[in-house]
Amino acid sequence: MEKAQELATLCDVQPGIVIYTPGEDILWPTESQAKERFQNYLSFRWDTRNDNLVTHETNLAKKEEGSRRKH
Image (tube, rainbow, N blue to C red; front, side):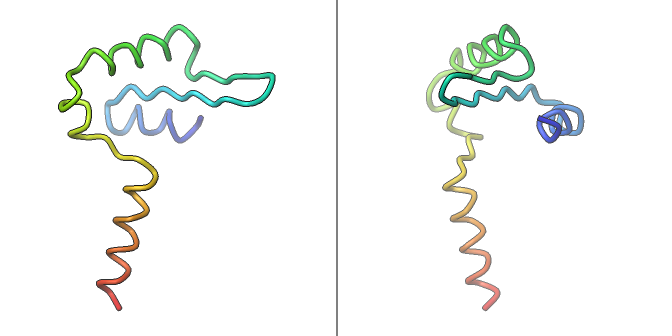
């Protein structure tokens, strides 16, 4: 959660984190703030949301591509 707070401060963004675990779900920063942030995100049109969306998979693919270019 510390890294999310750093992103919020350094990049002027409002991250929200949801972690599903058996028996305990974790929402950050608070449940109400996380819900508000996700609702705000969902209020954007689909194409607008995807303009800046970075998934773990796309991030790894970019890193692999950069690594291949170096070799």
